[in-house]
Image 1 (cartoon, rainbow, N blue to C red):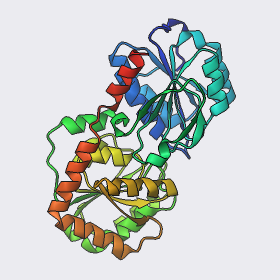
Image 2 (cartoon, rainbow, N blue to C red; image 1 turned 180 degrees about the horizontal axis):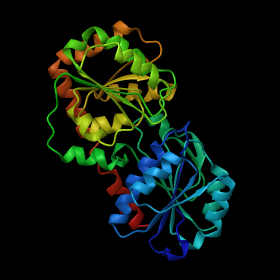
Image 3 (cartoon, helix red, strand yellow; image 1 turned 90 degrees about the horizontal axis):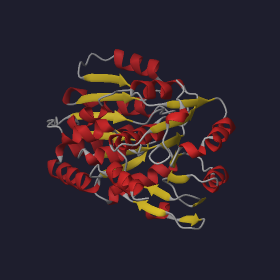
Length: 345
């Protein structure tokens, strides 16, 4: 689907450039879509420029959002430059820093809204968004003039389904455990968590949520198929994550941005991190009273995983405190705050 760029009005239109790929996943896209929807509701026109990736295209089609796809990044950048006068803002949401390209686009006249999380890099932008709770990740080498700094969980962008679930009356089920270890889970930590919890399956309800690029689905199905329990649910690429998360008593997560979603919905989290930055973030959420960061998903002993789940199930007061801390920490109004910043600039 190609958008007719001539219809866009420079005074109100916004172009998004998020990273999407099998390796990176679609977290950057989903956060961008949440902000885009809020902008549309406030009278802005939006379009997405992305590299060709079918799962991302399907999501944009499903939501009726205009987009252009490119087979090479250089072509995407060139077209952004060519149609600069059609847009007022460029929103970039990348895993890899593209300082030179973004600085060049800014010099051409774009106002840049740059999403980042890990900091400690050189940036050129007008509004810098970093919702991280890790202070060390909010350090930057700025190119003058200095950007507006939208820092901290007040600027966490949550998917619509999470915000809507936060407003809905959904009863939490005391012994329902959700396992959601990212879009890919390349090390197969989901399988290890399942094996760790097998001895207590009579006492819990277990939801195994798989990402779109989960590579171990067949192996997991065989494992679960050997088990006669009916209280195990396996779902991939779920569209009602918010409702399921709000029903859960505990989330087992790898420590990515799902932590912010769980916090908003008051769901206590056990973190089994995969990458070093997830460990750092998991520890930060633990210090905030929202999560328990217990180890690496590939190496943490089964007994440790199982014991932590049992301990948290039985400790109702601890779950209540973690839930309260999370809801207070992430209020779900990040998109609204950013729209206000954009409107005033």
